[in-house]
Figure 1 (cartoon, helix red, strand yellow):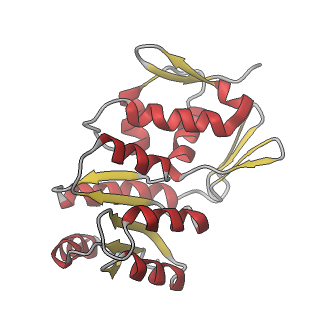
Figure 2 (tube, rainbow, N blue to C red; figure 1 turned 90 degrees about the vertical axis):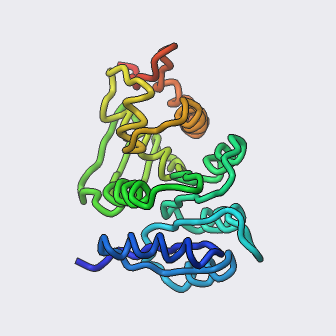
Figure 3 (spheres, rainbow, N blue to C red; figure 1 turned 90 degrees about the horizontal axis):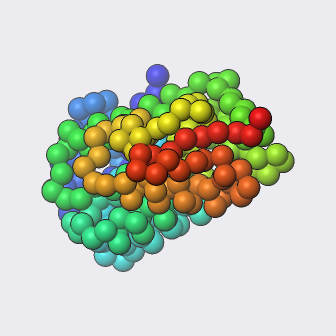
Length: 226
């Protein structure tokens, strides 16, 4: 099997080396960029990049700009690294389609675990894994969602969240359960991460967004009209 390529973007060479060493040890091919402009050059040249690990504060072109440009062309998963732990930064990252948000300093082992969790879903999708629920069609291999004849443009995490809801329709899901299954790790923050994604997901789904019911004080449940 061909090795998976990951692009690591950080202006600190020590940080790049730390991340690279841990990823290479797990069998990944790591490409490096020291600023945002170099990152975009590499990204446009190599169509096989499966995941981007991106620092926020960089010269020439910061992480937010890089993420915006990537999202104009691709849904490749993005993990954002930052030295700041401002809640507004985190919410801005999710608005831009960031899939994971990790504050420095962090454990490289945790970073690798999150990389593996994302890649298991994006690279390891089954060929014929298609779900249809109440007129919502999810093609997990192609990463496509259609409602009727309309294709719905979702970020990676919104896609995973909707898939999890549909696969568990009729079941009340706590926020903790959703975090552990969709984000695939024990999240030490609060419910804002899920609620932000659900709000955007409902908006993009139009009338079908009503299928995602809020269970006050607990979480959510997906139900289609019979």
